[in-house]
Image 1 (spheres, rainbow, N blue to C red):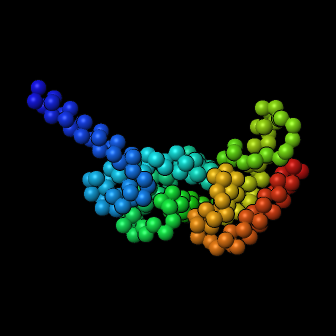
Image 2: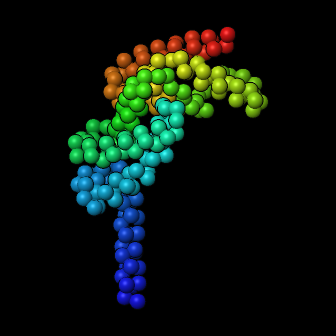
Image 3: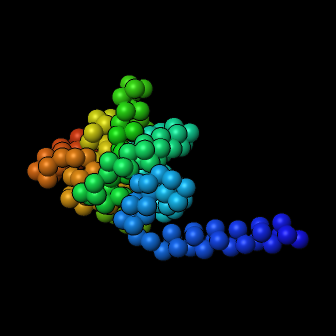
Length: 202
């Protein structure tokens, strides 16, 4: 009975702590997580829960295999946790984490030295009448085939712009490029994609 009461009290205490953490902003959680003690670890777990969905989606769009994506997400989160004490807050935590994940994906691509396939279900399609399911499937395959022939830095920026729907400022911060350089890379990425898209129709 004593142990049961103690366990219930502990469970209630932990529940209240998690609820309090979940009510915090990213900035507050980051400051707590920087301590990297027991409370800091709990704060980081809340950050992971809050950002895991979009982070996983991003990485899966940048690499071909789900297993690779899962490993890269975990690597990015581990890197983020240990780098937190050096995080100055010049950008949002989300932007900072996105930059870490993008680097992980790029390093994975460079290490493997091969062209990656990309999941592009959310890539905008040309204006046309409502396509049939079969036509939609063919169009996605067409886009994927075109993207497979676009150099990685341009694929990356296309994913960030048209799948993640980031602004130029957000992309600039994520890729650590100036705004003019970001616009230039996006323009060249569109050109590469248009050429690859037309070639894949042949």
